[in-house]
Length: 584
Image (cartoon, rainbow, N blue to C red; front, top):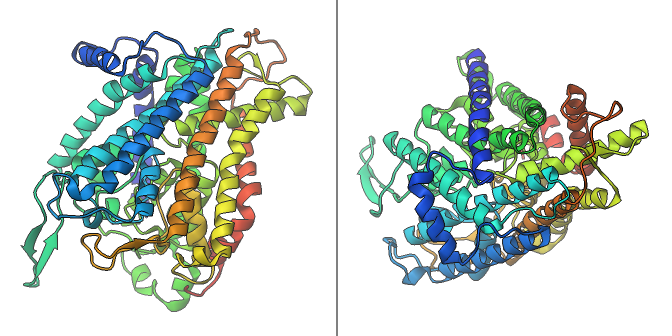
């Protein structure tokens, strides 16, 4: 167990050391400054502007910026849906797969455009290489870029001095893709290929097993999708079992590399925020708050999985393991990762909006399963998705400042700008919309016969499946407790005779779309309102938002809001599961 804690500690040190370096580069990109890659990519950047027919120096207010995001995302959704519906007529389809059901296509298009990557299907048995590359991988790039662009506009609003401008969405989109996501993904893909991740256009291959039989192994252009899947906190796997599969994640080394890819940009953006507002202490304060909550999540899930569940102890299922050298709950986990790296992965991918998995989340102990649900219940503000996590956290920062102002009887301020009624109303809308969608969708799903047909397990585990499904989709995460079903494929590989459950696919798709764009627009509206305000100099009574006191208060506000919202629902699922000695 000591070795596991050392692995986790080494990862935390590496992430902290990487954060200011990534943040400095991201700040230069988002400010439109020249970077190391400018001589190489500058001509392609200018060509992109001409192709889009936009002027990168043309400023937009928050409404124009939001309209651009919605318009671009709508076009992306239509393009991806068209690709999914015409799969049988496309090239690079060695399996000869036809299109899946229309409602599955609706759910998948909504999923990848919103950076959720929720998957009711197995990629290797359902989708062609062309759809994986031209559809899903492209959306992995641009949906991540949309989130970072929305954050860039939000930061400009916080830092502006009596200006309505938040920048230009099209310029931000192009620069983020060209200077951040594309080169980093290319480098990461090459490293992954060198470590054994598959990258080929050949069809499946038949191999002879050690037992003397034969097995068909699916192949494909995996590494190119794997790199941006992690870097953009997307999470959608090329294969059904995602990063638990050796062709996506072969070893402990690639496991740690992919974990760093997931957190590099969300953590680096806290440093970029500090640089862009001219107060690096503020960026480190946000990093400290996020890191404190992240460390707690890792510690709880690791300790819970190392101990095992009451049901396993009651059944004597852990006796041999405890007496041996491994110990703990290894159900649903890969031997090459063990409990420590599986627990770390679980925490990393659920504090961010990355739904990648390297272990079966449904096989976690009750307390272990409580951690990913709680992490998503915070709104994934503990680093969160690329861009989306930080702008959501900034809404909590304003809420915390407002509460602190009420406590001391002063007008709340942040970065020298007064937080007034309009901003507070927008903040509450942004903070509460996602939890409201989660609870409404989950309640409808467990109360409706159309929803219960998707549930596999009984008792608290079955409720946890439903709660996790809509918690994951509403928070644009994409991971799942195994068992919640929305797609039936009777003769895989291929979609012949396949059908989807309309209720699960349509409700999930709508939930993903609303929960992605409504809070994003609310954050932009807050930024637009703050951008027009004058900055007042700090006085003796100003409550500093970059102090340890503020960090503690911010953590408390995030925890209290999450607890008040989801504690009753969590009691019905993972908490009961963690207390009972029965297996469901």
